[in-house]
Structures are given as structure tokens and as C-alpha cells.
Length: 88
Length: 92
Image (tube, rainbow over all chains, first blue to last red):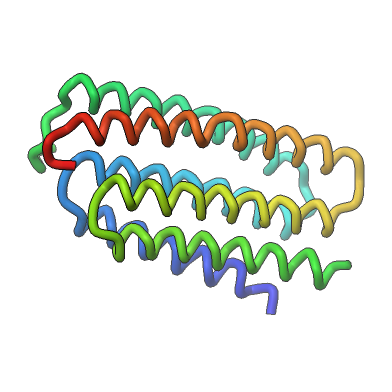
């Protein structure tokens, strides 16, 4: 039964990827990337629970700080007028 | 205790799936952020609580407390900055 945690995490990842592919505009995609980083943190927590190794929580701590910095930087870039078309 | 810990981990993963479903169901960027960020924060908190139940040792609890503190301090700030930037655009 404990495999349900990974199953729900996989469902969440698929839904986030569908949102990234389908939603229009930069702001929507930044929200989706924010939830994607939350999925990565959840994967770290599940890996720590599976292996019993505290190093995964240290990884999660560092990733939480980097995801915060990335989101704030993208938010200021968006506010400063990043282009809104779909070109790469 | 192990069953309770895994139940909390599964509940957190299901809440994360609900947060991802919000992205597809809600109409615009601000309401997506409003719902999805709160649901994702709650999901991570519930999962970390489940991990604290699973591993009753100080080396785990201090890391879990640090992670919960960092998340509680940074996620609202990042969400607020992103919502301000999205609201200042005409297409939001």
C-alpha cells in the first residue's frame, strides 16, 4: 500500500507537465514550475522515507532555497517585462 | 506508528496531485497561484509530518524542523512576488 505515495506523486508530475504544455503565457508557466519544484521536494521526502538516509533531507533543504531564489528572480523578470510569446 | 507515518505521506502526495489538478481546472493565473501554492505547501507539511512520525530520532527532527521553517518563510514570499508580477501584466 505504501507505493500509493509514489503513484500520487507520478500523477501530480503528469498533471504539472500537462499544464506546462497546455497553459498559455509566461505567468501560468511560472506557477506550473513552482508546483514542479514542490513535486521535486516531495520526491526528496519520499526518498528519505524509503532509504532511511538523512542526506535526502539536506538535498531537499538546499533545493528549497534554490527554488525560492529561482521563483523570485523569474517573478522580477516577469514584472520587468519578459516577452509573453511562445518563442524559446 | 509506521502505518500512521505512511498514511500521512500518502495523504501529502494526494494533496500535491490536487494542487497539480488546480493548475488545469482554474480559469486564470492568479487563481491558479492562489489555490495551487497553498495546497502544495500543505502537502509538503503533511509529508514532512509523516516522515517525523516514521523516523523518531533527533537527527531527523532537526532537519525536518529546518525544512518546515524554510518552506514557511520562503513559499509565501515567492508566491507574493510572482502574484504581483502576474497581476501587473495586462493578460493576467
